[in-house]
Length: 119
Image 1 (cartoon, rainbow, N blue to C red):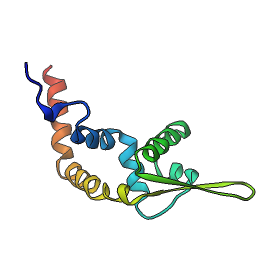
Image 2: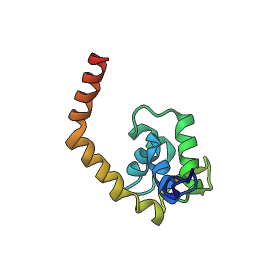
Image 3: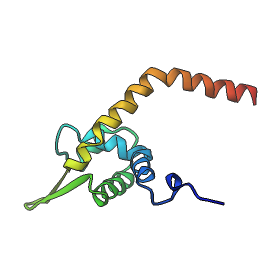
């Protein structure tokens, strides 16, 4: 049996899909498109995300070089997150997925309902 190199676990295409397949990754990247935000501001803008998941996602995005964390001194200390140049390169693909979802979301929901009804 020969393994297709396109499906290897460490292939770059799978890496890219892993980065955008996590629901919160794409949402937070999009939320940061207009500039730096504090975690509390992000949480207020992004419905349904817990503090724990927000922190985990921001750390994951930082680990992957998509988001930069900037800490400011003072009392109280302040932290902001912003997209890196690499993170900004994902805005167009995320927007394209959003356009696709807007254009085809009803079709997907209809298919899900048919499947549920016919199963």
